[in-house]
Image (cartoon, rainbow, N blue to C red):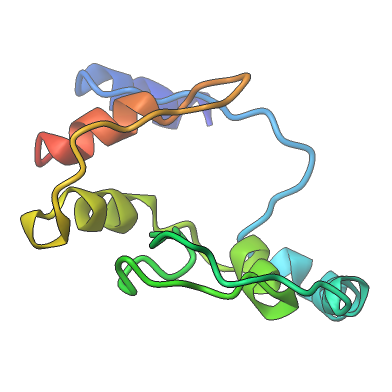
Length: 120
């Protein structure tokens, strides 16, 4: 991992470890998905009042996803499509978002947002 980080850093790009306990977004979690769906089955989410662009389904720009058990299972299991979501959000045909806010105790995405918006 350190060698990969060094190669990316040599290209003047940001790379760093993200401290997590579980490797989400990977087939390794497939065995827990049925239990997760079962535990979340009683969720009764309401459709959002404003359009949302999610990293789970970024191509459904400005949609109103129902964030039910299937949504959260897909969110945990599937790849995070962060780059696509930022590009969709910034697209002029979708009112071109100009401000992005990262709310996190460990900000790691601001640099990726900037790179995406700069077209890297």
